[in-house]
Structures are given as C-alpha cells and as structure tokens.
Length: 297
Ligand SMILES: Cc1cc2nc3c(=O)[nH]c(=O)nc-3n(C[C@H](O)[C@H](O)[C@H](O)COP(=O)(O)OP(=O)(O)OC[C@H]3O[C@@H](n4cnc5c(N)ncnc54)[C@H](O)[C@@H]3O)c2cc1C
Image (cartoon, rainbow, N blue to C red; front, side, top):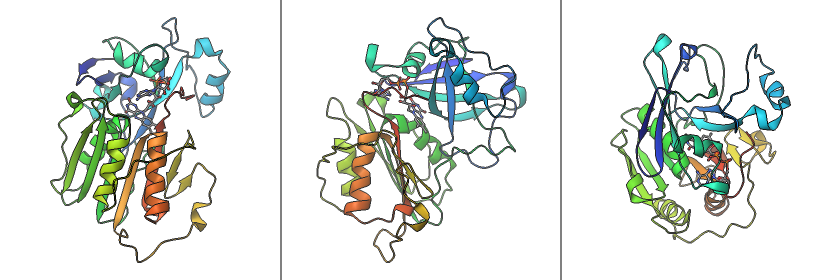
C-alpha cells in the first residue's frame, strides 16, 4: 500500500503500488471493472502465490482456511501512473465492527502504508472479464446503488462520453459520505444519505419516482444472496438468450445498472422487470453483498 486517504466517514481510499502492476489495465474504458483482493490471515501473513497459473483458485482453496487469508471483490476506482510506477486505487467501505465487519472492511478501516494484499486484476492485452456496464445503444442511463456501488458508479461516470444522458441514485450511510463526482452534465446525480433511515427505502422510492411510478416501500422476503443478472447472464440459471424480448415499451431506450446489498437489488429487480415490464436484456442487477452474510470469495 502506497497511500491512504480517509474520504468520508464511510469511504477510505487506498492506493497500491508495485512493479508487478506494470501491465495492469484494460484495452478500453475501465467502467465497473472488478478485481479480487486477498487480505492477510489473522497472523498478518499472505499466502504464497509462487508459480500461480490458471488453476490458482483451486490451489488457493486447498490451503487451510486459517492460512490462506480472505478473498473479496472490489472495484478498480482508478489507475494512476504508468509502467513500473502504476498504482491501483480502491475505495473501501468501512462497515461495522466485530461480526458486522469482515476482512475487507477491517483492511480499509486499518489501512496503513506498507500493508500488503494480493490482487487478481486484468493485464492489458489479456482477456479478463469483470466489466458489466454495457449500455449498448441505450439513449438514457439509470445507475443506482448503495455505498458499495459508489466506486463503480464514480468510475463509470468518468468513462462516459460527454453526450451521455441519464440519472444516478446513490444511497450512502450519512450526509458526510457525499463525494464530489466527475461526469457528463446530462447525467444528474442524486445522493441519498440514510442518516439512520432503513437501508434501501430512499433508493427504491427515488428510482421508482424517477420512472414515473408511486414510490412504494418494497417488501422483499426471498433474496438470492448471489443475485447476478446481466443482459447475458443469470445466476438463477435462466436461459437469457431465450428470455422474451419486450418491444414497443416506454422504457425501450433505457439501460439500468443496479448494484448493492442483495435485498435492495432484488426489490428493484421486481419493480423494474416484474411490475414495470422493463426488458431484462436492458438491465444489470448485481448483488454486491448480503446483510448478515460473509462473502466466500
Ligand atoms: C463486483 C463487486 C464490486 C465491489 N466493489 C466494492 C468496492 O469498490 N468497495 C467496497 O467497499 N465494496 C465493494 N464490493 C462489496 C464487497 O465485496 C462486500 O461488501 C464484501 O462483503 C466486503 O467484505 P468484508 O470482508 O468487509 O465483509 P464480509 O466478510 O463479506 O461480511 C462480514 C459481515 O459484514 C457485512 N457487510 C459486508 N459488507 C458490508 C457493507 N458494505 N455494509 C455493511 N455491512 C457489510 C456482512 O453482511 C457480514 O455480516 C463489491 C462487490 C462486488 C461483487
């Protein structure tokens, strides 16, 4: 770790540097590029990745749990510098303590120059995947998420062409978490601090209101903790290619990108796809984390 900046009560910006990052990057815009980070184990040690190849994940999983450290998913907030001086910037959400925190949140909370992680990240010129934002020919964008989606939405906004149009809704824990964002003037940004209100209420209502609907509070009973539905993939196993295409709909020109806590995303999925009939090929719904559940990797 080469730098730490406390951005707000919830966000800690961490910069990682290493000559091993020289080729880090993608050939186009980063958008919501995700990466994996492995945090040190309880003894503060990282597992060895010596000789790692395509089967690194299986090999890593065979290392006893208390030794292998913990892997979590994060977003490339930015890349700085070039060549051997390339630095990777990640914005960490600091959340709770004890059981309501985890290795990722703890790492952000106690970030200090010199601390180390292992990253699985894209190299320029090598296919990697991990970018979901794909609006195709949509003329208006709807980006919505909670604090864990703020780094991705911030990065997406910086990659958009100046002519882009749309709206962004970001729910964050407190008013002090409202961050300056750079993006096209045609994309309005709405921050929704909870300031003690229940999670997802304000975001759900604001998105529905934006789409011209009654801002009803969602009732979400069944939640898929691994909810991940994009125009080309469904965690439910649904065959996306044969899913019915909706045509002649008032939201035909919309592309929606929605990420955050799984029940929040489930509630918006129901509202947009089931209730409003928006074509699921025009929406990406991504459960970034699940209340009360530690992510496995
Ligand atoms: C594609 C993708 C990109 C992501 N990008 C980022 C990013 O850039 N920055 C970022 O901070 N997160 C990001 N996340 C979310 C992050 O991976 C999860 O929040 C993860 O659970 C954090 O791991 P942890 O070790 O802190 O907590 P875990 O060990 O997974 O969970 C421990 C406890 O903490 C709770 N918890 C986890 N996250 C939160 C939270 N945010 N708020 C409140 N409670 C929580 C869990 O419900 C559980 O009870 C991303 C996730 C995905 C899938």
